[in-house]
Image (cartoon, rainbow, N blue to C red; front, side):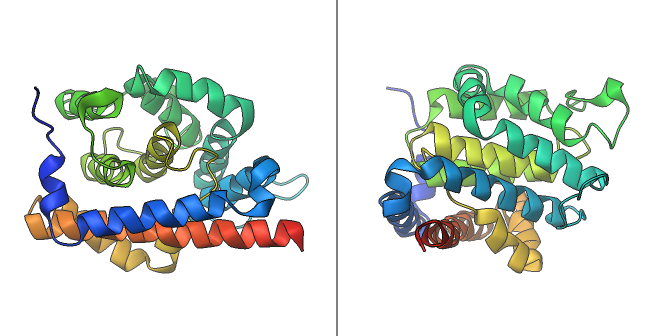
Length: 247
């Protein structure tokens, strides 16, 4: 039987418990009365909040464009990504993600960086990144059986550290993490907003990501636990969206 490359992560301090707590929080918000039938409304609001927060983490504006005005390039890209992670577009994207995740990463970069780089650079990973991207693709398509929260953290952290496109990599990484959560069934309706939690503590976010990239056991554990905690916080944010829908 093939060895699961991520299985050792569950032995790191706090990881298994954090993954369980994240799962419980996400499951709870999916049981909210507003999300039993009207979850699509909450998912759309969550997607917009995620886009604004994700853009701000990369230096974009949290302000949405008004009538006759354009968003700044980073925010515009994050909003395009949000659109493809919502509604029927998400269903289509998930079908590709489950069998060819690298194609989806290229698509996400094309959307995120369309106003930031020349067309020739869109969706094209930098030289020297192919092997690690292939490894990520194998994990996403069944190469591990760790809890989805842990896999989402690894995909998120690896894409941040690798920066495969050289532009809009943060927006792409956070979107890919969302896709892991949805495709695995952890957050099947895409309701949570962990990006809001990251934006509230951007220095902690960057420090934890750097620790993951360094590859030490402590750094990896800290990052995975932090990602699970952000999912918990993102579930609370989803709960506030759901509460507003029924108030």
